Image (cartoon, rainbow over the protein chains, first blue to last red):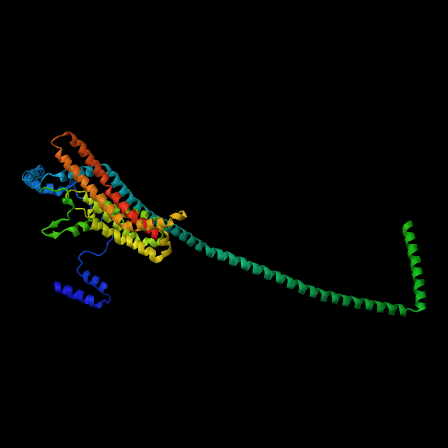
Length: 251
Length: 225
């Protein structure tokens, strides 16, 4: 079965030109878990230890057979046996070891918590910085969304703006047209008035001319005798009228 | 097994196999490699921050051309610190107490700084041999003195490190033996133990020895480049 896997990966190797990519492809057929890395699994918590060195699993291992004091007895017995058989000789290194051990344990006890909290603080600062970048990016995007919505609202209003503008322009055009129409009317009327006046004048002048001609002819046709007769008649009429009026006045 | 006073300075053999290589390579095993995560565990954070800060400090007085040495100097520092601190544990062998190793560190690195300085800007490098403002009659003498001091530098570097560490270890041994011997008479034991402890704390001055080493190396680098 594995030979098939190897054959597949070998063909994969051959088909890809650069060797590095081919090797990656080859090993990918042997992967069993998913290749995605996100979300990153959390760091494993430190294993439980007792007395700073011995892992808790050791105690759990011995608990069924020897109970709670088992490992301690083992430690004591082992060290006593080593010492008694002189398998471990106490020499100057022992003193050195004890001293180094004491110094180290004191240092860890004294500076351990502050050191650990300083490290944690550094990591937290790093995380906070990255999260800050992310938050700022998100705030930027939220702002961009708001701006976009406002722009969309503005676009809705834009058609009304166009209508208003269109109305405006057509009104202007209308006004202009009417004005020009008025002007044209005015001019036409002026010319017609002129013609009318001209005709009136012509008629009046003809009439006057005719009247003058008639008068002239009539006056020319009146002879001297007729003139004397008319004057005498006028005087007799006047006398009669005067008598009448006198009669009416005294009556 | 009865330990002689100088047994700690013999390089260890196990079934005839020299373990010196393992002793020298010990620091490589102890440091976790940087991981892909953004948030590391505490030890990795501490290691990363220490390395970063140290490199920044070291490269501060140097011009940009010398920054190629960053990796070398940082590695040297970490290696030496770890070797020395590990040597404080009982029954361990400290490679840096051996003069050949320290000379092996000192001579090539020193010669590199001198050769690079001479190759790139020979006049300035040679000009370092005469400090400014010396009165004229003293010039020949001073040049000779400066040359001698230049050539003594690698020996100084190597021997300083060796002497510091060897002396420190020997003192620990002597004082521990004395403490052990004096347990029969109780009184001075406590005082001597206290002194041993104090010395140990001072011997985490092995760290300081490293600083001294790297700093002097840095100094020559700075001067040459």
